[in-house]
Image: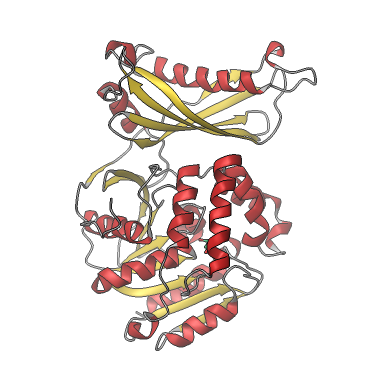
Length: 418
Ligand code: MLT
């Protein structure tokens, strides 16, 4: 990918995922723990490894690689240790394939304590398949087929292969289409209430590349690429046009989509977002955040962002805090670093706003949003001829999730008026 817009229909295929990868339960033994009784880090690595082999044992067989004359050599590991585990704890390991190339693949694994569902650790493992001489060779097809056919799925989650990247997409209902685009470093579930509630509409909510359950390639991120992925998705679903609804970075992607595919947008909803490009200071902060993500993992990014995501009122709800934190901490590091560079390099959309005359537009902002403030939202709504502005109380940067009922109501009224 060279930064040019890629043809939306290129390399596009679609398949439904009927089953899920098996979850593996493993017990922590005393000899795996340190003098203070915590599961030690070396033993953690071997538990993650055992969970992977157990998964293969229940699928294509532990010899799926050796049968093909190859070996999956581990090239890189990033682990977020989130909580201590002790002898006798039963840990449940879930696994997902987040990137699948010709010779390399990335697996994301999480370990949760079964007793209280605490997230103990999440990790990313990058493998390259090599032959006996250590040369990279193709991933055995039996392994790829198994992983693709058993990728985790729930509800209406479907998989779409777009520009060589496997996107996870929630598709629900029938009627005029709404395309929901989440922010950073999040996933489509921030729209849960809107997806569940807006009957009479076709609700489409992808995980952008690098986030949620979509593939997270090491390279290939940019607003133009996210937007081209969405255009390909709209094509794959056979849709003429959509109401485009983007939150924060999802709004930046929406602006890019409008620059190239304006005729495919029937209505626009901008939530907790802004039109300006990054300032020089903000660009430097993106680079610093990328270093943090690479060195300390997604957990450190989640830690640093949680208080800005949620309003003081929302932070009184421990379930919401835990949910948003876990969502951010589970984002692949490659996706975080990619999104940071895409946001850093995005162009200003201020000049685009007046050209949106005639496009029904709703701007929603949380009253307590400090990342993209109500002042920004007001200025943006003012610059788009005819745009409507709604400020939602007791919400900050994740309005649809923090105040789901109010957001859905406002959205429904807007959609009804189209
Ligand atoms: C987001 O929520 O998508 C980000 O906070 C946007 C940004 O950092 O500019």
